[in-house]
Amino acid sequence: MQSTRTLGRSGIEVSALGMGCWAIGGPWAEGRTPLGWGAVDDAESVRAIRRALDLGVTLFDTADTYGAGHGERILGRALAGRRDVSIIATKWGYTFDEQTRQATGSDASPAYLHRAVRASLRRLGTDRIDLYQLHLADLPVARAQALIGTLEDLVADGLIRTYGWSTDRVDRAAAFGQNAPHAVAVQHGLSVLRDAPELLGVCEKYDLASVNRGPLGMGLLTGKYQPDSTLPHDDVRGMASGWLEWFRGGRPAPEWLRRVQAVRAALTADGRTLAQGALGWIWARSDRTIPIPGCRSVAQVEENAAALTLGPLTPDHFAEVERQLAALRTAALREADRPYWPSPMLPTARP
Image 1: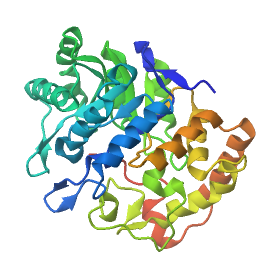
Image 2: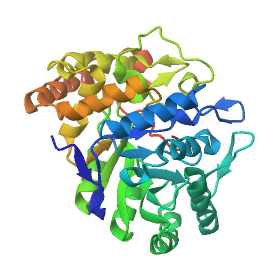
Image 3: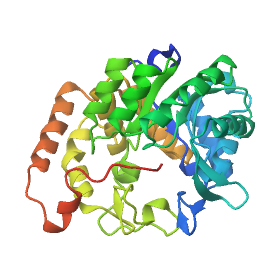
Image 4: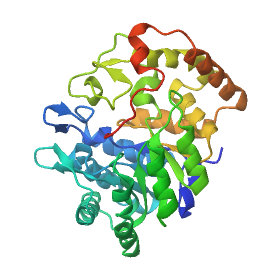
């Protein structure tokens, strides 16, 4: 497998695997509801980012709101001195208070866009952002298109190189693909647990990169969670929310664990770990995909980066995974699972 891919129609070369930086932002919240992944070791986060670079990972995806600005600061610290060999993707749209680490709302105005990009540049310690993404997944198309002129001005000024939209809505993705000159990517959910054929179709039609969040199902595809596993209260996965599909009541959702179990053998048949097999499925699914699994330790980075050497699943293994999933989708389900199957609520606000 080629270990690099092109970021849509930009011509920018990036590693075929990125690193998601939500978790390294550390604690932040909306009121008393946690939005981070619990306590984090900043020094280990820096080591993880630098180790990723050493192993050929060049794309780092964050957002200004992760850790209420802290995530961008840590990424900037880690990339200091190596900025020219890294590609930074960040997002804007949600508002927050850096001092209290509280989410405070959203702002889709051009004026806020101007302020947000400059604030991100300061926190990241850089003079340009390679991929700047609208974070408001459900923003009406007309309001998003009203920002294109401002985004194009930021490109002309050299503050950003390209831009995109983080959304699971096909009409939103297509709106930028059709009408925004320097839009080059859609960030959306994609994993072996949940395919996204329509969004991949938009990427193919408009020559956009498919940047894949949740490629490991927020940890379910690492294989470390069992039905009785519980998540701590300061972890976003430990709360109940309509946009958090993989976990309910602080436990792995049983219908998703069944999918993991169904495809485990096919994903690991050639000696891969479960996580490496899940990444291989994504690369086999489309040559536009760039999964960005979240990492907050050197060990996680090393396991994920090793998947680059293994490459996509073979056609036979990919077909077997699809066969297993097709059988599972048509199986009888426990009554308690029916409201969540086979298509739970799309994420509407986060991550």
